[in-house]
Length: 378
Image (cartoon, rainbow, N blue to C red; front, side):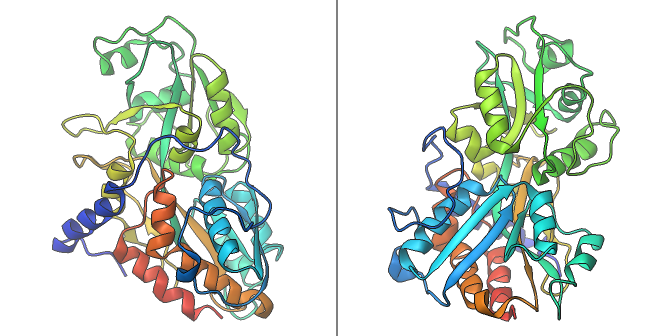
């Protein structure tokens, strides 16, 4: 089943932009991006308690994508305030670790910025006794190319240049390839310090998919969760990368937009072949999400994203975080709470709550498909 790519696409784009158009994208929060360990009853940035339908009780254990950690914090605080009988513990650790823990039966659900691979689906059948793991898109985001270069406030980069920077083929900020994209900008004669993820990461997977599609052949490695480029330095998690760029002069890296905002980091615009470079904003990412296609079958809603888009105002470096759950064979003692929590997160209130923190509310047509699957979980 695919999202329609006809007149409905235009309407979907408008609807997605409308969801984010009124949301503040200013930097917020503190520099501490460490997820809390459980839901609390404190002030929540989400739906009022009366709008969250609680069901079931107990503890929901989860782990995985650090790109969605800030979103999970918002959701679990709101849900915990409304549903005192349930706590949500999210361990982070990266998409690779999350999927691994899910397939070991250690967590109720996992967050992954990459859809399950066939081998991972096969492995999930041992845990989902009567079913298998499926991908439910829940958190829309964009990968911000963050940088720390004195005197440079509006950096423009493109696919081939980024591929060469992250593979140590371009090593100076005043390299002719960067200068050509930034006429009139004074670029320093300084070494580029590129940072990449040390842990297996769905954000890395999405970035390298972009480099493979839009890099003009400059990225010679297969896309994947494990970093393959040459040179550079590594850090753990999105928070680790953001902290390094904030501290190290002449550095560059890639993090989900909420981490760029929380740490007050500058984000590069991307030259895609459109009439002008595309800024890293939720509105521009929404244009790309509106044209996504569903690649999964049945209740699996894995998406195909166009990383090489040249459409006006469409930011190409997007990612979606999936909540990995069993379609059948979920543990009976946490099933009701799991369905209740996921129902809140995909609701208009849940999506708008994280939109205010730099995420991209999913288009309503896609959200409705997720909403239809959740009650069928068994």
